Structures are given as structure tokens and as C-alpha cells.
Length: 283
Image 1 (tube, one colour):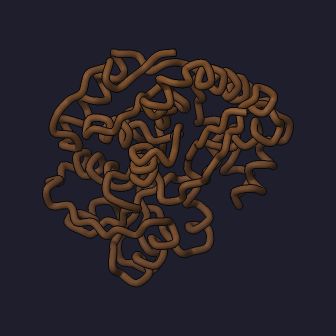
Image 2 (image 1 turned 90 degrees about the vertical axis):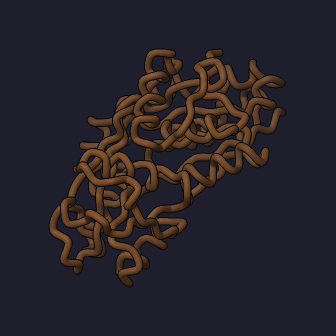
């Protein structure tokens, strides 16, 4: 058995991995795929890849491109979710903020530096014509930290995946004042260079198994009910999410990579560029 350490966020996007593990599909190929949920998100997963604590990460596209440019010795081996991630822009339910415009020069809660919640704050600022240099951040680690920061007023707004944050809106803890979809595919699958070099066939087999499941994911009987129960979501929200989510079984093309990297550069999220060969490895 080959042990493989894989990390991802505890969100509905990653249910296909858990189904494959539970069904013994990796085990049948002599792969002991050890999944670990990382509620802190992208910044933490980038660090785990760098430290060798994870072999594979299912990770936000913008976060890993930024970190590979900054020296993370990993490669993107495939796009996992092609559709954009829809980030909800949230404020405390009792706050006076009524629209995104009210949030100019206000403090944004982020899970950690280099996380999607920080990078998307730059995207949102850019789209609203705000100076990105003026952004102020409060590190809150997890969504529970965001609840505390917004409720106490140590931060003013928080950007997180819209559907995963919806229960907090429904409970009257957060209010959503807007959305900010990513201008690129949501998630990619990334592998540490050292692991990839030694185990290309294992990685290929893992992709083959997960791709089969994501290809047919929406056809799984009662998948909406399963997701609703697991993630404390209203069934109609899950059904909308399933309609909006487009899985991918393809490599990240050079054209798509250059477009993403140029967007990140123009937003000031990265200050230098990497090459396609240094960032992406097609298997």
C-alpha cells in the first residue's frame, strides 16, 4: 500500500473524494489515500505542501499560482472545478453596512495571509475601483473566527464561499451584501514536486479514480439530500449549487494559465511571473 497525504477544505466540493475513499476505490489500487480537512484553507495548505506535510492539495487556483510563483515546489496537475467560485461578501447582521460600496477602507477578515479570502479582497477592491494599497486585514483563521471578529467589530466584512456561509446568513449572524465570482476556475489539484517525480503513476491513478466520480457526481441518486444533510444546507441552496458547479477532468492549458497569471499580476497579487513549465505538469 502506498500512503498518500491529501488535503482540502471541509466543503461540498470535496465530497467526491470522501465517496471514493469510503467506497474503497483507492484501496483497491493499493493506495492508502489519507484525507485531512483544512478549515484554515489555502494559505495553510500551501504551507503544508512546502513542509512536506501534504503530498496533494485540492486548492484554490489563485492561491496556489501565487505560492508557486513565490517558490512553492509543487505543480498543478489538473483543474478540479472549472466553474468560478462565488464568494459572498458578508457583514455582521446588525452592522450598518448596507452595500459593498459601504465597505471601502473598512477592515476585511481573512483566514490567513495568502488565503483566498485575502486574494479575493483584492479582486473585489479592484472591481470597485478602490486602491488595493488601502486594504486592511484581520487574521481570523477559520469561519468561527470570522463570526467572532464581525460580531465584535474587530473586522468589518468577510469573503467566503457563498453557499457554505449561507447557514450563518439564514441564522441571522451574517448578512450578505454582494457576491464576487472568481475570474478563473475555482479549484485545481496540486502535487508536491518530490512526490510527483517519484510517484507519477500513483498520481495518474488517483486522478483517474476521482475524475470518474466527478464526471457522474450530479447523477448520484439523492446527492442533493446527502449534501444538504452533511453540510447543514437548505436543499434548494444545494440544488442551485449543483447547477452552478462544473467539474473538470482536464489539464490546465497554457492559455488558461497565462490568462490567470496575467490577471493576478494586474491585480498586484503577484509581483513577478512564473512559466507554464514551472507551474503546471500534465500527466
